[in-house]
Image (tube, rainbow over all chains, first blue to last red; front, side):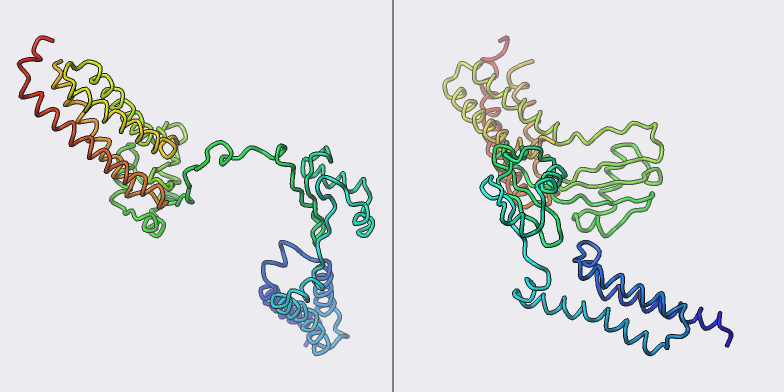
Length: 286
Length: 68
C-alpha cells in the first residue's frame, strides 16, 4: 500500500471518528468551555492530527489515547450532572466581587483580578459607575455578571403595565411561496383560513415570500415584490375603535332621551361598555 | 335620521364587535387572552339584549319621536 493511500485512509477514518465524538460531547461544549474542556478539545485535535500524518504511530496507540481523552470528559460531565459537590470541584464556584454596592477586595485578590480588569468587565456590561452596581459575580467560566441597583435598571413593560398581555411565539406559515401545514395546525388554523386572509389583502400565495401568524391570529406577510404596499393588520385596532364609538353613542343617547327609564338603560350600558373597553384595550392595542 | 335608526346602527356595530371578539377568542393562543375576549363577548351579548329591548320600545313609541 502506498504511503499516501494509508495516510488518506487514516485521515478519513479519524475525521469520521472525531465527528462522532464531537456529537457525543454535545452542544454544551460549544457554548461554555471550561478551561479543562478547552484543553481536552485541543489535545484531542492534536492527537488526531498527528495520528493522521505520522505513520510511525500505530493506530492502536492513537485510538486508545483519543478514546481516553474524549471519553474522560464525557464521564466527568455525567458524574457532575448527578453530584453537586463533584460539580463544584470540577467546574469551580462563582466568586462575588460586589455585594450591596461594595467591592469585596479579598475576593478580587483571591481570583487575581486587578481593579482595572474589574472596571473593564463592568464597562463591557455598559456599567461605567461602580456605584450603580448592587451585585456582581464572577462566574466559573470567567464572565462577570452584574445586577444593577433597582433605580438604575432599565424600564420593562411590567413596570408600566402591571398585567401586560402575554405574547406567544409567532408561527411561520408560508416560506418561499409554500404553505407549511404543521405550524398552521399548531395555531388551530387551516389552508382555507390562510387563503381567505390572503384574498382579503389581495395577494396570491405564489407571491408571498414569508407569512407569519401572531398569537392573536393576525397574518403578516412579506412579498417577493417589495414595491407593493401591504397594509398592516388592522382588525384589532378597528375593533377597539368600534367599541369606543358604541360607548360614546350610548352616552350620547343617554343625554338625548327624555325618558328616565331609557336614560338609565343607556347609562348602565355605556358604563358596561366603558368597562369592557378598559378590559380589552391592552390586548387590542397592537 | 330618526332616533330608532340611530340606535339600530349602534346595534349593528355591537353585533360586529361581538363577532370580532368571538373570532379573537377562538384564534388567540394565550389562555388568559382567550378568557378575556370570551368574557367581553358575553358582556356585549347583554348589551345587545338591552338595546334590542329598547329598539322594540322605540318602534312602539315612534310617533312620539317623529320630527325631533
